[in-house]
Image 1 (cartoon, rainbow, N blue to C red):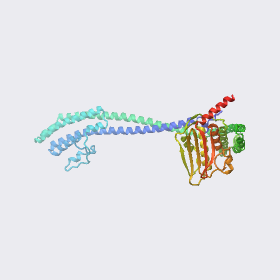
Image 2: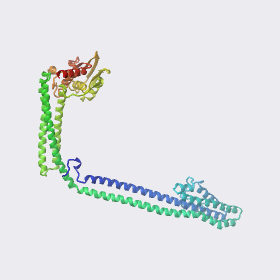
Image 3: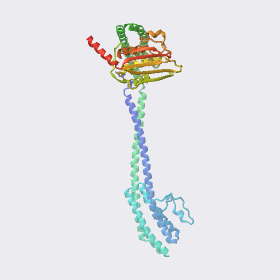
Image 4: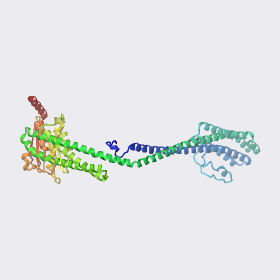
Amino acid sequence: MKNTNNPKNFLSFKYFEQLVVASILLFVGAMLFVVFAFMSKSAQQEGLQKHFNLVYLSQELRLSSDQLTMMARAYAATGNEKFKQFFEQIIAIRSGVSPRPQHLNRVYWDMMMVEDGQAPSASGKPQSLLSLLEENGASTAELNALTHAYNQSESLVQLEKQAFALVEQGDRSGALAILYSEDYLQSKVAIMTPINSFLANREEKLQTFIQESSRQLTILYSGALLCFLLLLATLLVIYNARSSIRNNIIAYLNNEVKNQTKQLTVKNSALNEAIADLKHAQARLVSAEKSATLMRLIPGLAHEINTPVGIAVTASSSQLMALEAVKSQVSENKIAKATLLETIDTIEDCANLVGNSANRISTIINKLKIITQDGFTDKAQTLVLADEVKACLSAIDKPELDVKVSLDVDEQIRIHAPKFLLQQCLCALIENSFNHAFEPDSLGQELRIQANLINDKLTIRIFDNGHGVPDSIKDKLFDAFVVGNRNAKGMGLGLSLAMAIINQYFCGTLEYQPHTDGGTCFVISMPIDGFLQSTAREQIALKTHA
């Protein structure tokens, strides 16, 4: 049986994930082969360029030697000083003393030898022939061979200068005899032999380099082509697997319908448990010490619970109906994708309604647990009152109101109590002002919070200059589920919760006082160690009961 519980199988067949991974790897592999082939091709071009540069420079060394011979013999035959000047200029250019003409590998000195001859190209910076050979990557052996040829050429210059001396003495035939002598020709052989060996070695290296680089390029191109072919085959397999994917979609959706049914059953059970907990909380409220307050609590509680319970029941019924319809169509294999998606959206909306309703019921129950001294386990700690007030102001969802908030709380006041209880009390009173005291478009609205400590007695005043408390609810202001405006935020548990916390956990009192400006003032009076007193009193009561 296929496993459809895993969402990864929603759009997959047996080897879908492996094929996707293989496709990605093949694509990456093909790209790497292409990149490496491009790099190898660039390296091949660079190697060929270096080879040609070295061959060109070795040929220049050979040509410079021949050109020196040509200029020396021309000077000996004619006695024309310009040939001697060309001779010395060739030596200066080759050694890096004079600027090096551009494109020296082209016809240059032949253009200069005629009368009024002009240089065919401009000159660049001076650079010796040996340094150019080294820059272009000549090996040590190659550089030594060409250096030897260069030195032999320099030695031959001395013989040529002897011929120049005879020309200056008027003995041109003696000079020509030197320049055509066997010693002169042997010296030329000594120059050309290492150059010839260098060229032969270069040709062998070039052949090896071309073979190796071509073989490497062939391997890389073949690898890239193979990866692309395999990638194409993989994509064709995935394309042809659409029917398998469709079958898996149907199987997945069938399983989702079953899972949604199970989840709905679990949520209904949780809702029933929440209702049972609510009934238990109602029973505990009826039997609590403040029986009069609890008796007034029941109608309000029923009203607040009725709405989310009704929504939850209606949503649950809608879910069951939608699920039955989908199950019927799925079993007949007649369901359309759009219908299925619409039904899933409906089920999801209904599930959210059930969840929100259960959360609202849970919130009411949690607040009731605090009021009835049940379900609170937070630990006490030393708290800075000013920091807790600021934290409450930051946490409250303030409407878009133009309200000036003023704090007059001594930074030295510290209370040893649970953070949760203290913030619940302060946030309820501050939030009451924002929700009920102020109007959206009114100006000059102000909320002030004052606190002072005198003789271990803490007094906190929270007052506003809003429109005050309606006369109809002044007598039951601290009862649960009492609100002056049903359109305002809140469930009517804030003030009753604050009253219960201050009375039960801090051994203090919470009073309402009309403000002189027509607003509202709530005054908290309690001992600074009220929570410790309350804890000690509870422990004594437990021991007495035992």
